[in-house]
Image 1: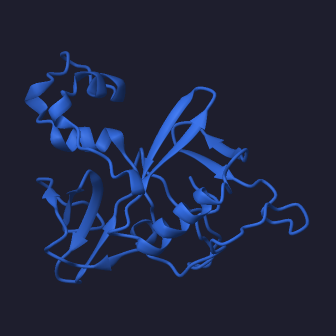
Image 2 (image 1 turned 135 degrees about the vertical axis):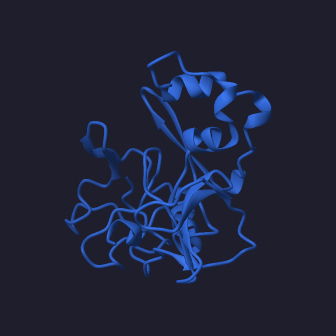
Image 3 (image 1 turned 90 degrees about the horizontal axis):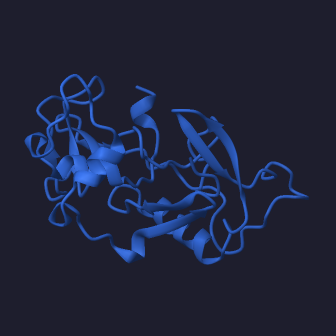
Length: 198
């Protein structure tokens, strides 16, 4: 229950390609699963969709660029706040503050809990009410996977984002997985606003 109640501002290159690419287009070598790099290398130009520049952020690292696509259909206030933070250059020069191999990378202000040292947020909000889910809406594009998952009767993709939904409960939400970016927060559901992301 807790996993589906997390809010995620997301991007995903891998998921968008995987959702658009039928498995038979890129046969896996016998006994070996494809890597993300192999899936990306095999993707044809027409299998990509254009990103909305208004909802695309770039994280520049020494090792290369990370492209982050926000999901305002699922988390409009958080997407707007992350854009406000980016516009005021809040993230510029901040640190990668937590790395757990094959699990998570978190970045933001390492001094955010020290009011004297913390980077000031100028116009954006420090915290926002949670946006863990949204009301079910058939107008939101949805490409179903053949099976649901343990948290939702339906799992699939919406404009490249992994999504879960429950018609009976009248809700839908972004699913958590590799390639997702989420807002870091404390125990309180309204304790994050996008100043720390993972």
